[in-house]
Image (cartoon, rainbow, N blue to C red; front, side):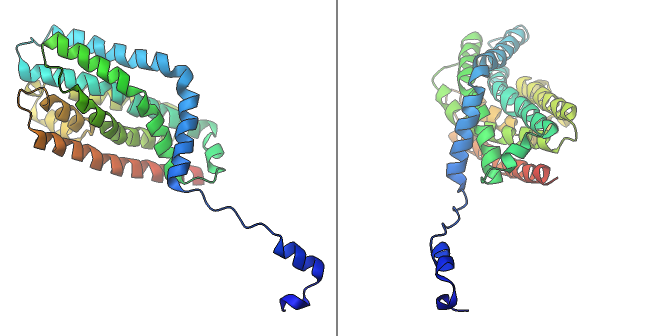
Amino acid sequence: MTLLSVPPQTRRSTAGAAPLAPAARLLPALAAVYRAQLTRAKVARIPLLFVATFQSVGILVMMRGVVDAGQTSAARSVVAGASVLVVAFVALNLLAQYFGKLRATGGLDHYATLPVPAASVVLGAAAAYASFTLPGTLVTAGIGAVMFGLPLGQLWVLLAVVPLAGAALSGLGAACGLLAPRQEIATMLGQLGMSAALLLGVLPVDHLPQPVLWLRDLLPSTYGVEAFARTFAPDPDWGMVLADLGVCAGVGVVSLALATWAYRRAVAR
């Protein structure tokens, strides 16, 4: 059938039909989800920052009674571990609870109806939660450095440590929340992950047995802790700092890819 054989009314309707809108691209969709999540979480921002920071500062005070300021290596580990713990509290613990709640209450159905890539949902939520951690991390690191007599000149490294360690932990937290069969299990996994970051990141390495050190090497936040701890040295080994940050970045890519797959799986069920 040629166009000339089609009735005039049909030809006009076909010619005037609007084309389908193009699929949303990753970066614009990511920005939209990030802004939406950031706006939604503003109400809880101050309590969130207070709890995460107060917890880490409390751990610094407790460890000050165990580690002397003269124990330089141990003091660096304690301050760096307590600082990165702020990231673990938000990115791992709270994000696992958030996605676990979305999955249990059917909240994922809302995102499933949006024309956005799955990766943008996971990355947008992870970035919004991780954005709250930088002020608390800087405050914790500053208090810890003064408390243990460490230099303050390299705190700018946290501008790299927080997003890279946050990406790795956010991916794991989102995956735990999306893969857990029940909301309670997602909450438990988030708590266990944060406890692991606390015990394996804050305690000085010299005090840990070898099997625990192997477990420590498997935790993504360990490399953020190591990178930050190295900067407290009088002459930091920047090559090793970059290597540790590179591990964080690599684990972050893998964990966020796992969380994206878990999101697609949860939505398809």
